[in-house]
Length: 111
Image 1 (cartoon, helix red, strand yellow):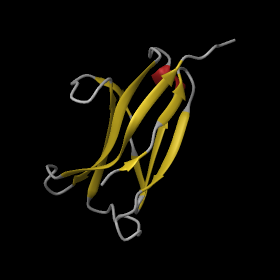
Image 2 (cartoon, rainbow, N blue to C red):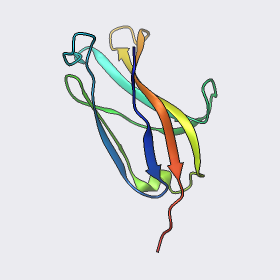
Image 3 (cartoon, rainbow, N blue to C red):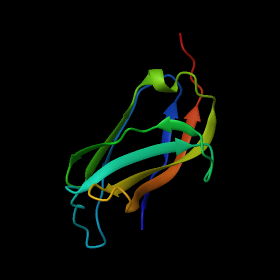
Image 4 (cartoon, helix red, strand yellow):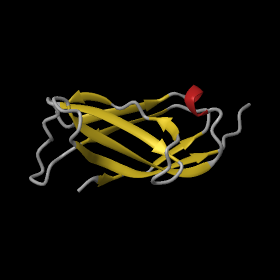
């Protein structure tokens, strides 16, 4: 079962989060043979990508996402959905959702 985490960000600002991925036994997931991918979309099943999360595998069980304010400046205030998937690097077919949740984009006042 995927972990659940909601992302809250303000348009035009930077966002960073580190995910600690653990299995049912509580140990970190060995990410050696996995690629990591993540996208946010307006709704489930929608084909258009709202934001590419560009997750980075940092260590076993540790994945970072870092979103710059420049990527979110033009986004309208809304709520979408996202997931971070683990993809078997040998077949690139076997996919597993590691984290999923809502992405809330809030307006910001810039001075």
